[in-house]
Image 1 (cartoon, one colour):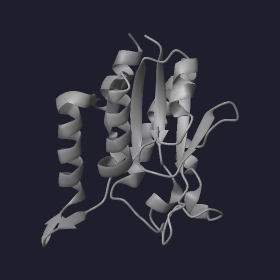
Image 2 (cartoon, rainbow, N blue to C red; image 1 turned 180 degrees about the horizontal axis):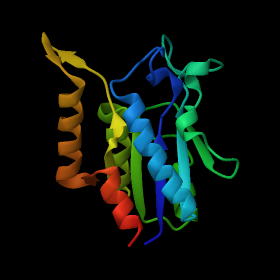
Image 3 (spheres, rainbow, N blue to C red; image 1 turned 180 degrees about the vertical axis):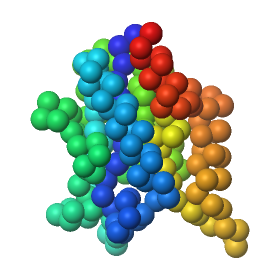
Image 4 (spheres, one colour; image 1 turned 135 degrees about the vertical axis):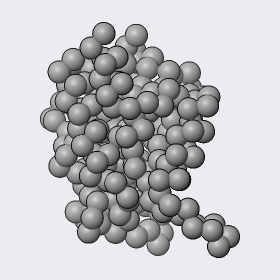
Amino acid sequence: MPEALVIIDIQNDYFPGGTMEVVGAEDAAQNARTLLNAYRRQGKLIVHIQHISTREGATFFLPGTSGVEIHTSVQPLADEKIVTKNSPNSFRGTELDKLLEENGIKKITFCGMMSHMCIDATVRAAFDKGYSCVVAADGCATRDLGHDGVDVPSRMVHAAYMAALGAVYAQVTSTQEIMGQLDR
């Protein structure tokens, strides 16, 4: 089955010193890098998603800043596609679906940031479009959240979103398991 790797928003603002730091960015990026190298070796389609904020009052991914740049750990090669987006869903208002269709892609492996926003929105949209979806849970990261006086640690936010995606929308697994499947 023709497949692609879609790397979502692994951008400088999510790393230490960035304006929207997520917990575990470095570890997630290293796992994404492992997948990136494997997909490159196998000549599979790789798509980098780059979020550029256009929303008034946005505080991160601002055009012209270093924070908006794709992190060096997953730096695209000249022949790899970069799709820019302005909302959490990587399909909304972008050429992502067209690019995948033109390449006959049926299966997508996802990694990136943030689990509770762009990963969730994009994987659900991909499922709705009929793609077979895989999420490298350890290739994703998120941040601590809170609601109604309840603090929710990033570990719990991530687990809740991976559990929800894994229930219906995707095979949620590890980088190591994906690597094993690629070698088959």
